[in-house]
Image 1 (cartoon, rainbow, N blue to C red):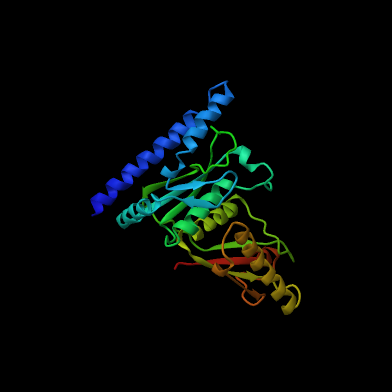
Image 2: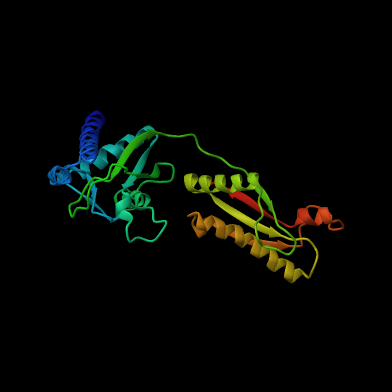
Length: 270
């Protein structure tokens, strides 16, 4: 049974690639735009052979009668400890009228995962976006604008805890290249493992306990806000403040107080 499903997946994959490749080939390198349009329309009229398809400038996906077998074959391959690499394609001309920064390719990849493969868990998929440079003219017909590849499982990415430091009486993060690299790696780790973090804000002993508690909390929340802007769920981030209560250095010197003005990031593996 598994061999049969694999053969079906390979055949569908070939058909998928063939139509995509042909669609690319016919879109460029011709001066007679009317002839190009005629050929494209003819190809698009065969859209029912695509398991997954999209309408112009839309992220909502549509499926055809081939999708059920196509999906079954892909899911079956995941039993070999692999992952599905879901790529959404887009054209520059599709972005006209959309807010700046819109990543239509990523939106399409997310739509495929959330709507068509909701059972996929962290580590079983990767979402990608790619610009289709060989574009075709606007059409009202559905067309192929995505690709799903089976990939062997990648090594699990791990990351440790970290301390980030803050200026006096400030909740603004000031990180060097190492700190920036850590935060980028933290986002990657949380996305791939569904891991959680606890962020604890600390201060020196200048000022009252309440003021320092508030400053410590703002420092923790500042890091949380950064992670949220990178797409991390708030449910995976907890924050709290210890204020001035847990110094790691003496508060009798400026050097020691600088070390106490910090936020600790503790990773929690699920």
